[in-house]
Image (tube, rainbow, N blue to C red; front, top):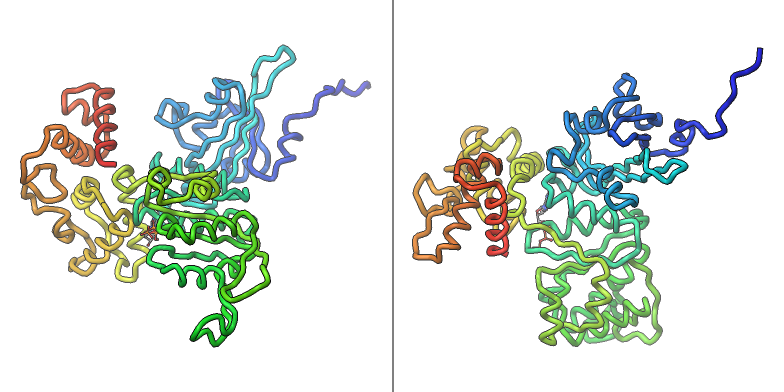
Amino acid sequence: MKAPARSASPEPADLLNAFRQPAILLDRHYRIVAANPAYQGIYGEGEPLAQRHCYEVSHGYSRPCDETGEECPLKSSLERDAPSRVLHIHHTPAGKEHVDVEVHPLRNGSGEVTHFLEVLHQARTASPREDGPGLVGRSPAFNHMVELVERVAPAETAVLLLGESGTGKELVAKAVHEGSRRSGGPFVPVECSGLTESLFESELFGHVKGAFTGAHHQKTGLVEAAHQGTLFLDEVGDIPLSMQVKLLRLLETRTFRPVGGVEPRKTDFRLVCATHRNLEEMVAEGSFRADLFYRLSPFPIPLPPLRERPEDIPLLADALLRRMEQGRGHTLSETAVSCLQAYAFPGNVRELRNLLERATILADGAALLPEHFPGVCGRGLPGGRGEPWPHEILPLDEVEHRYLRWALARAGNDRKELAARLGISERTLYRKLRAARRGEA
Ligand SMILES: Nc1ncnc2c1ncn2[C@@H]1O[C@H](COP(=O)(O)OP(=O)(O)OP(=O)(O)O)[C@@H](O)[C@H]1O
């Protein structure tokens, strides 16, 4: 008997098997055509995956991601007629994970997109779980930041982290280092604020023995200590103008001279900087060198303040309580969550951590209640910082902004429900909330 004719094209499964990461072939209706063993192992749970929908398998949704408020990489790939990459939170047997989803459109002989190749890269720089290490969060604003971190970490590009105090700039800098090929090398943080000119130079470049009175030994500078690793310059906007030129020379030549030394030395580090200042404004005012600014800022990453991601507060609180000795077994009550979500957190995650630490001491039992957050959760009195009611006469716009932030937290961040209760459309609410956020920035 003749053997059945074999197709000239390769089998999709063979192509998918070339990937070590989980990979699937999808049709235009979000249906899985084939999956490689890595995908089957994580998402299959012993069941066949063919013909199941990707959104159901990886998210547990009954509708495509874009219909539930997330960006769908298949849809954007089709719209842009190009590959697309999006950070999603997937449900795996090990729990929730941040996953970088890469989608490539595939065409038939007539050039029509008929299928998609989807490859998943597990994000290692952040976690959406309370027991995760390092950076935790799962709000859209946080996920967008993680997406940028995941993209830039493997490159050698300098990164500029822009964020208020306590937003996690040092943690993000570490995440960039850990996600890079330099992760086996040192991570050297340098706090630039408060350093005098001479201290800055000897800290950064080191000094030779006898360079100045009291220099009894030679000292290795931090730029040398960061060799083959990452140098993290925190509060880079605070570097005095006179030192900025020395930093620029170091970045341009990758050489430096220790204080009192003659021979230039070479060093090889990846640069990550952070600031809460507006460097562009400083350049315009003449207090920051434009040439240095361009060197530092090829890849800026804005870090969202906590008030722009109140939905992360319960998760962050759980994670921070687990990390605190005294936090064992403590949990936030629902009313405490609502009150914290209405608070503006000028000190961001650091302030949340401090408030939780104090609350665990004030609480007699395991439940952390509004009264354990004095000064933040007014005991039902109008005017407490968690409440929208002001003690003074304010512009109506400001009162509306405060009220909306408070009401949104009270409605559990459910915009649809809030819009209905306020008697306005969801669109109007969205516009007003955006204005409220801009007013706060
Ligand atoms: N997403 C996060 N997940 C878990 N912990 C966080 C997160 N963001 C910040 N933290 C914690 O908040 C505290 C402040 O973070 P960090 O020191 O990185 O902030 P920063 O922006 O560098 O502050 P500063 O500008 O004042 O130096 C740390 O204890 C850090 O572990």
